Amino acid sequence: MANQSELIAQAREKVNADVLPALLGAFAGKVEQIPPSRDEIPQVFCKPEAIAGVAHFLDEQGFNMLVDVAGADYYPKRDPRFEVIYHFRQLPGLGMIRVRVRCTEKDQVPTLSVRWPGANAAEREVYDQFGIKFKGHPNLTRILNPDDWEGHPLRRDYPLRGPRALINLEMPADENRYHAFVDEEQPAPGQTKEGK
Amino acid sequence: MAGDMHVISEHQDRMTLSIGPHHPATHGVLRVVLELEGEIIQKAQPEIGFLHTGIEKTAESLNWQQANVVLDRMDYLNSLGNNCGFCLTVEKALGITDRIPDRATVARVILLELQRIASHMVFLSTGGLDVGATTPYFWGFDVREHILDIFEETCGNRMNPSYIRIGGLAQDLPANFKEMVDAFLKWAPERIKEIKDLVLHNPIFIDRTRNVGKMDMNTALSYGLTGHNLRVTGSDFDVRKYYPYMGYENYDFKVPVYTNGDMWDRTAIRFDEVDESLKIIRQALDNLPDGPHVIDDRKLVLPPKAEVKQSMEALIHHFKLVQYGFDVPAGETYHATESPRGELGFFVVSDGGNKPARVRVRPPAFYATHALPALLPGHFISDMIVIIAGIDPIFGEVDR
Image (tube, one colour):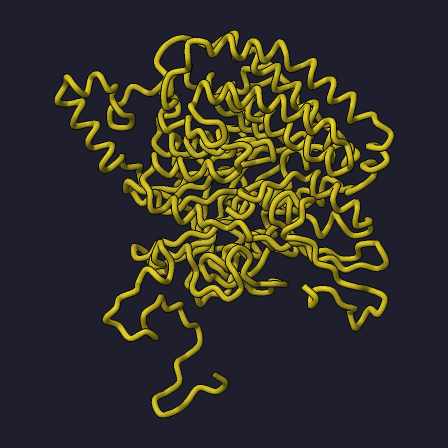
């Protein structure tokens, strides 16, 4: 039996030589190759709208396991600041690939929870902690934090000790808290917002 | 709550029932909203987050070595495994994987396998208790007690030792480490076999667990199940075999595989995994080399205390490491380890500073908990208890 580390290296070479060029060819302009980091997993950047197609393409190539969906915030170093990171794995083929979707809080990233039901909860966690929205998700609600929680805690500009960390006695009480990102447009001056 | 229990308008014969979060059978703080027809579950929705402590956020505010300490509070039955997974990831990001001394690596293997046995013992004890078997509870915790005694002697702490550090171990193994583990290896197999005889072929246990919570391999893969939950469906995916780390490819052990995918298999596979772990510990203990227990790199690990009192340079290194820590090159690193519950992956983002920019834990039990909607329908409520016990969630890890 060949050495397992050689088999892993072979699988990695195969992904680099076969899967990546095909992926770049099929999604020209949407997918961009980036050099691997220290863990040597081949990685690509992907436009948010293309991730469903990319995942389907990888599924056909034998990447049948969605290992993880993770969020990351690169504020203030990068714009767009967020990334959704998918790890795919071929089982039992050993090949792995990392797809990184750069997005803003206004982007809608297509959900993968139809093909991989396990992504359902993981995407909810990314939404909960970062405020990244997933298009077509069946139940995009908070999962770890309470439903009425303010803000998205894993953002880099969210205070470590929570909303109350900003308490400053000189500020008026209603401004004296962490303000969550507001998605909808503010009403024009003179007009009042409907509802509350 | 009264509002949680009502008749659903579109299905007049159905009723919703909320179980948990404070229910002894949910192994922690899991709330499951069930839709019942009579006593049969038609739909189930798990709700988690009751133990959310923001460990990932806290880790971002600590430096690399300190982050280790909060991460072992995650899966509290596998705290050394959490330490080890994080340290291996950071070591990979630093590029020092090859320079870790052999003694540290072999000691890590022994401790991790002991931890695996301890975790499996808790699974078997509490899982047995859930189906009404009281004796394995005491015997299993007895075995675990012996392991925790070894940890206490070795690491100074029983539950959250933070003993495995970036670069090696916190301190050298005690002089009597070999004797302690040796004594355990002589005593434990017989005890574990007794528990096995008591549980596995007991007719009541078989009645409660056979064909309960069945799942096939493709469904398990699509739900992201790993570890024993995947291996009972016929896959032999074990990170230790597929992506060997810490020299696991050099040990002679097998990956037990079952094909029925039910709760009896999930229990039986645990006993086989314990046997394999005992084999690994025996091999590792016989080959435990002498030598340093940490990497010889003063930029990463504290110099010995005696040296700090003599040498100016050692004092500077000590001060710098305590005050600032060390930088990790910018980049993203993923590393998977096999925890008792499945693939425990760490995805670490560094921006080049002395603190992690992001620590993402891929918690195996998080995915297993969210496979409950596929496992529960068609079963009785009393089977729900068995199924939750069988997928073995630890809510410190699910909620982080």
